[in-house]
Image (spheres, rainbow, N blue to C red):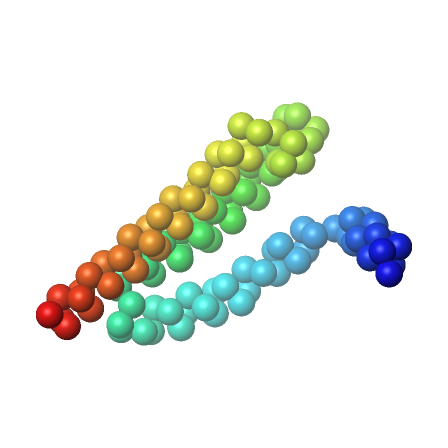
Length: 111
């Protein structure tokens, strides 16, 4: 059983995940479309989820720069990888702030 798992993981390590990463934007666009139709979700949460797309575009740009300048993947260049992850962290904080505001409104209404 252990060799089977090792064999599967070994084969998966050779799969190029770039097309999967690029295609993942399609369902996310549908998610955003329907998210913006929900009136109960405040604008800050919607902006936070939209910033995640900015993270994807920044990651793609920094990946190309990393490959062109250093000849390495983005994961191998810490400064560029950290810069890309910064955008994800910012979008996560914006989402969290929006949900905290929703909870505060619910608490005020229940008082």
